[in-house]
Length: 87
Image 1 (cartoon, one colour):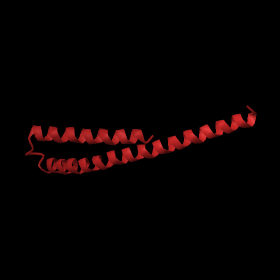
Image 2: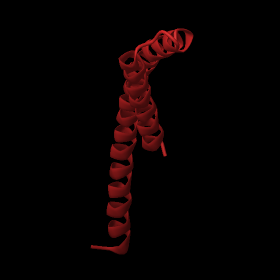
Image 3: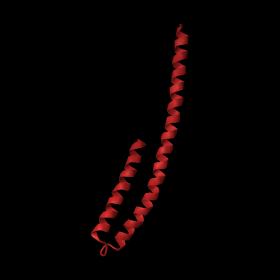
Image 4: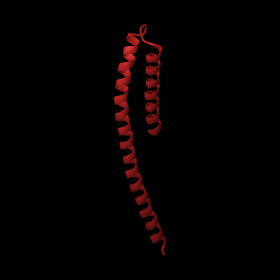
């Protein structure tokens, strides 16, 4: 096999790997976008609950405050995970 043939094979293999990586990257972006969309819906629910707890802070039970805090932490972790995936 000639040097040209070796380089041609190498070039073809690189192109193949590049194309595969490009498809995987696109799919990964879609997965992250789906995760983002789900998290946005959850954030809206949490934001409303947090606003209610803040508004009624004096009257809110310990359980309600703890539930709101846990939901907020879960959403925060979800956004951190997305951010880490995009790095």
